[in-house]
Length: 67
Image (cartoon, rainbow, N blue to C red; front, top):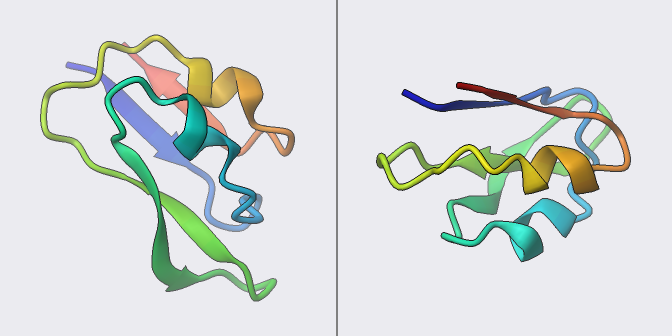
């Protein structure tokens, strides 16, 4: 099973990960981190292929993909 981990304190809510996810499983949520940014959230519905495009594009290295 694939798991996406988003470091809530590193994420600045830029939204790049939401653009590259081929299954649109990452969105900017309603939750705010300690720096005042709305952070990215991941929907684990089993459609994630673990392509890791989200982790590759993240400028803050806030996303880890586990297979």
